[in-house]
Image (tube, rainbow, N blue to C red; front, top):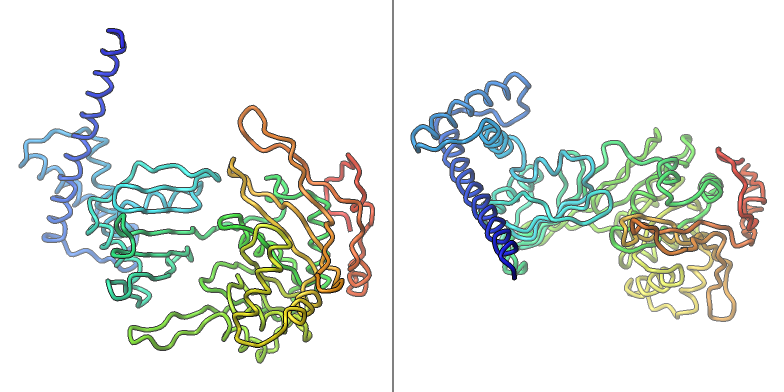
Amino acid sequence: MNRDNVVQFSEDHAAKEFKAKRKREMEEVCKVVLDKVIDEMSVNKQNPDIAQKKEVSLQITRIVGEVLSESSRNLSYGEKQNIVKEVMDEIYGLGPLTPLLEDDDISEIMVNGPDNIYVEKKGKLIKSEVSFRDDTHVLHIIDRIIAPIGRRVDESSPMVDARLQDGSRVNIIIPPLALNGPTITIRKFAADPFTLEDLISFGTLNMDMATFLKASVKGRTNIIVSGGTGSGKTTFLNIMSSFIPHDERIVTIEDAAELQLQQDHVVKLETRPANVEGKGKVGIRELVVNSLRMRPDRIVVGEVRSAEALDMLQAMNTGHDGSLTTVHANTPRDSLSRLETMVMMSGMELPSRAIREQIASAIHLIVQISRFNDGSRKVLKITEVLGMEGDTVTLQDIFEFRQDGFDENGRVKGSHVPTGIVPGNIEKLKTHGEKLNTSIFRNQSFRGENSFRR
């Protein structure tokens, strides 16, 4: 290492040391200020108005000045304002998580202990600069999250699912199960949900695929959205659900309510965990069974994971066509295998062929969606379920994404194209008044339409 490199290394190291020292000083000041605020001020944390918050902010600013004077510390105006903001977040928000929750570009927040906080921002995972003081601080914020909904988390019950006031989904797991410290995962609730036009502009699918899916939903096709974790299944399900006519009764069933249907006649059902005595649990399966007694025109299940798959298939086969759900799987074929496995978990002694016949008659379309390394999400295939051939469920792809590599910025290149096969359910769609121009299924290189073709 030459002399210039040594000097540069020394300067970088000194800068990092100074930054770390400054951060520790601000954390110490922030803790002292927060303690004084708790001791000296009577703060209304329940639904404060703007005037109350402004008054509290001014009082905190005064206390910050007093603490700095007593400790003979000098901080810049910006640093003082940061301390005021952090204390306000501790009082009214969720501490260090508050600015992350306020950032519209962030879709997920992952707390892996007090010092390792990651976020998904515009589809990419990055490490955040915010941190908690220690495990106790994380546990305090966890209590702030779960207290309003009557949940608890401790060594005897170290895992919990919860929901923030804005609808964001939260999973919490603490030691001894979480070895890195208390862990929080937040899937943020979109205040302004994506539309189909948004997904087209993102390149998730193209106009012809959108036209076909819109007609399929309105034409009462049973559809499964298949994909991996974080692939955008719930977002896609929400968009497809928006095509259900407003004169139909819709029952939605979810573990944590995320769907944001805009129709007038929607009944939203949500599972319930067991209480502290281990009683009172109500799962997806019980809700699916109960929904059949509620005179639904459509049933929308956020995700099938277990034995409820059998009840969902039976509902689809007994007059509740046009139902929608999602499943964790990497290919359309895998999604059917997953459904078969889940039906076996129901305890019903059914032969494999009988299960596959149920699946083949209940499911009409599979939409396979995936998240790529560049953060983009794309529909890989729209696949039609044709029926049984021997002991095998037969499938045919209607549309698919063909990747052409990556551009100079590392973004996925490719295009969505039809396979040239006209789906077999086109006649069923016609009976529901959905007439499609079959040219959208022809493999042409360019058509140039800018609006839905109906």
